[in-house]
Length: 97
Image (cartoon, rainbow, N blue to C red; front, side, top):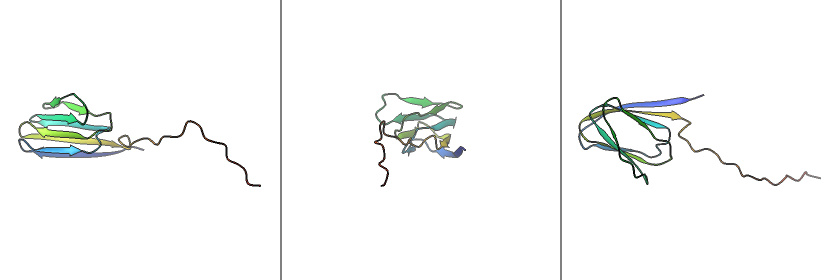
């Protein structure tokens, strides 16, 4: 079962917000223009109306409004949550006597 969270927001020029873990988060520009940067990622992503960006890595995203803008932020959960890792090798359990 997939749960989706969706937020529409208006941003004044020079406003910014951050997404702590942007993995699986889709940001769509509805009006204006926004700049997106991800921690430790050299790319600069600029979105204009009707353009979207979906982050794939577990990184913080900063969204900055280059002008008055309206964006939709959509997160498909649990896709944005880290996977539980299992050890490659497990010792056999000993049976109780």
